[in-house]
Amino acid sequence: MEFRRLGIDGAFEIRNVVHADDRGEFAEWFRFDKIAAETGYSFPVRQANISRSSKGVVRGIHFCQVPPGQAKLVTCMTGTILDVVVDIRVDSLTFGQWESVEVTAADRNAVLMPVGVGHAFVALENDTTVCYLVSDVYSPDKEFGIQPLDAELGIDYRLDPSELRLSAKDKQAPTFHAARQQGLLPHLNDVEPVK
Image 1 (cartoon, rainbow, N blue to C red):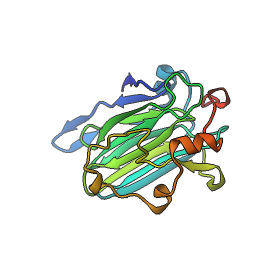
Image 2: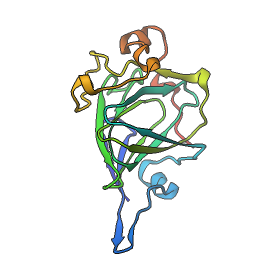
Image 3: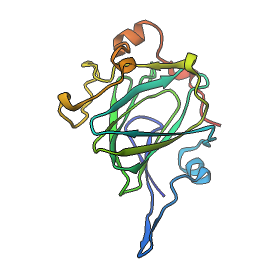
Image 4: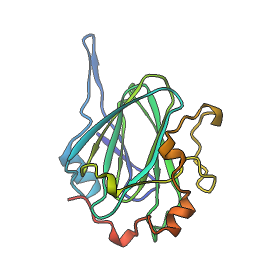
């Protein structure tokens, strides 16, 4: 596993070594010990999620109330996504910034994101399956969203806007500015490292 630090503090791209031969391929995509050694925190898996999407489906921008929040490790089982990490941590040096990583089934890479950031992705191909591990369980009363097409954030999803498909819930999510005004965004000092 190779770790590449992203511009959002605490976020990494993990490049996994794929071993292939005439039988197929094998790759490790999660190792708690290597994550701890490279990032300085452990990653307790409390839940695993899987989603399948058609090209143009956008999921997010989602985030959880902190504490406890959710750290996530996201990979692609089939197809390709553009995975987006949005720094919504008030008082962070990169507050309001985002970074994207193309995650593909062929590359077997993954994105590790810390507690307190927003997460979105768009399927760049049909029949795209995403698997992600999270550090805490889903709690509907602690889940929030930001409108993924918010002009203030200006996220480039690499597809024509007419191709993007959002859920009704994501369409109705508040803008980044409104979420901040409503006090929904986490403060950096409230974010506890994953233990």
